Image (cartoon, rainbow, N blue to C red; front, side, top):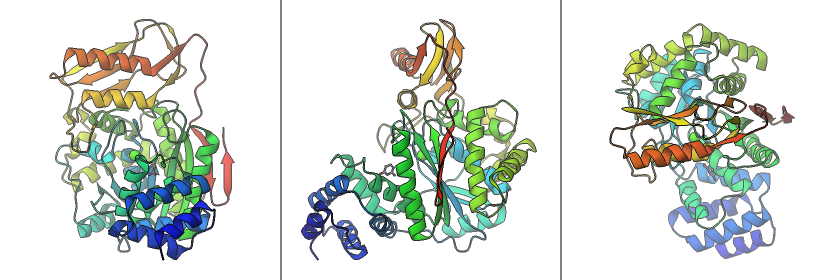
Length: 447
Ligand code: URA
Ligand code: CA
């Protein structure tokens, strides 16, 4: 077999076999297929697409290219969850304990943040003492004992995806639905999931800007799940504004704790999307008979305080301070809080999540490069959401900053934050939270 023949075949629109795709992926990781051939192939895929069988073959070849996690010792159906996007996306911190206390085991591997997106592992490290690395046996034992563990992704998961994603980034081949779908699904499969709930973001700050493209991406991932025997459901949710009001590590942990307290009116959009994703997780995990029943169960776990106690149990099991659940003041706290004022009166029409993620990164909440260090205490809190009325000079957000941050930086970040709010004269409707749900049975459009 020769790579050049497979590139030519894909260029001419022929379907590659599973063995041919495996040859390319294994050869690429081994160094036998060079970058220039892999990029030519990726460009051919970009233009020609891939069939469902090809996409599944690529996913499995990448999933098997490095370490895979064996969760067979964990009792029950392991349901993983993945969000595409991720500014102010605090769903994992809420869902892990919430779903666990409703009877579905959560054995989760998460990543760190990079660029304008946050990562669950950094957020968990805001809990004093929390250990994000556990030995495999400890990880499995903890899930069997308390129902939940969240650890940092091992270094050698899906090396083929790491290489190919890096190559796509510099060869204008990221925006290919089969390549994105196989990239995401390969990581979930390598992490040992039996079933997968995907939160596919749509809109300005998301990978897929239109609902139709988001649905196509979701369908591709659900089809891969079917092909490889991991039942997959995708919820298409809006990125018209950050989901929660906090952007930044300790700030997001505080928000998650507030949600887990179950007090009415706290971050209602974040709560609603968590209930929706969580309900699909319970259904896939066999812990509920219907979507509505699952949502009711989860809402009851929030209001009874059980979910918050599970959060404290998770923290304690991994060496963290469980008292943060009752006393969030023990989390890292920024030295300065600076209000961002509305430059004019009007209604909030949109809040650009990506710009806010970048602004929070400038305060030190995120990494510009993989090696950069971050300040867990800093970030941005939104005081207004889409549809809200604001007066000129009214606070729309607040910056949580370090005393070491230069005043010029604060001024620049405040300007960037204010510019992320689109203020308009006309009233603005609250955007839908969930646009559609994609299952193996088809697409249900909800908005
Ligand atoms: N996220 C991924 O993990 N892979 C892609 O290709 C795109 C987004
Ligand atoms: Ca994420």
